[in-house]
Length: 193
Length: 347
Image 1 (cartoon, each protein chain N blue to C red):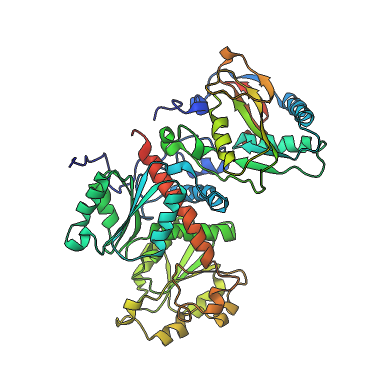
Image 2: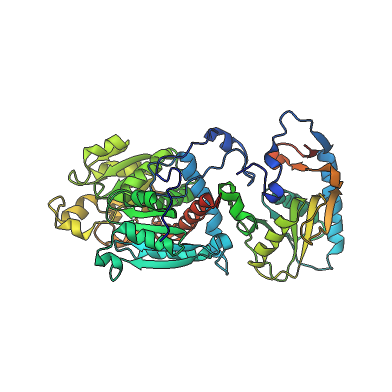
């Protein structure tokens, strides 16, 4: 399979920015600040007394979700359940991915019914990952409401899906944007590779 | 009928091995996004012998992803939606067939069951013809149990659909070895460095053969235990230690896998009397006392209670027998998913 073709948001990922100039847009302080702002917005947007749960989309969404939960606990001190969602089986390009499809565990060990679920991912681009996540989430119950929080909104949606909370929105001609997190990449950064 | 085209190397020969060494994938935190070459390329699972450690670990990791599906209230994922899985069991097996059927159904595949009795096979049709007829009906994956060693490898050369070996003669039973490895890893947190005993009729056991390969590839130290007639010295050539005194090896073992005493073997001269077998090689509460306190007792089932395994042990806290059955589903889901994904490129 040609690399980076037909992989939805995977497109360009293996593009190997080895020799290319990488433009670092934001570092750790900015990411922390953006997450604090998003947490505040989420806290304010939820109806009082709402039962919040935060579910991250594998893999970076998982760690962003954990960070958001730590920040959200000031709004809901008695603990917020967290989950991880692997969307591999629900992707619309699963057949095209072939052996490149890697499935890891989905971990949602609480009932999502009647909860306000905040779905978290690093970048929203085509919207297809989020579509897959919504389909997967529906298998776990009927949430009271589902909201979408992403660190970076990269325009050029292919589906009518928009984030409710986001850290930054890039310009359409910025092209590929890559989020790196300490937990997965050893460093916190938003880059234009 | 459309002539089945022979696809490039449909042989069990290993596909080009990934150039990336295992160290690279283990040093990196798994990000879920494929980087480097995918760990799995095979559209058949024919045996453990030809698999690399990386491929085995990939199956186990994928099975971990599927294990959760069986805990949902809606136990179905769309991984094989629109695909057809055929179970062709030319040798009796309820448990493995049921497990494969359920695994395929949880992946949203349609499942066809073929039995040898009452089918065209009992009318003298060859397996190859049966398989090609099944393929002509649009079946995507065939799960094959056959009494002849090499049957799965042979069919993989005759047809284009994916073949999953569910036991071929005394040769291999890959999914059983994989689910055993999965259960050990789940219980012990690792496989590397563990001491594993496989006890019973090793010579005639496909489970033993697959397990020896599987566990050794993952870094375990395997000892095969049984009477000299059923555990020939030849197994040392597979890298396993051969022992004929069960009591001597028990205290060292982290895992003890008790194989089933097969009825048809009892009549053969290779087998001592049942009583003698239990006396020397049965897992009794007394023997369990001498094992490590956290020893894991396994059995591929169905158990002969009071022969190879005492009831107190089978139902005791060290027993993982039912866990093996549960894990078997996840492992078979992973295998069906992986072979289908490997076959789906270029379709």
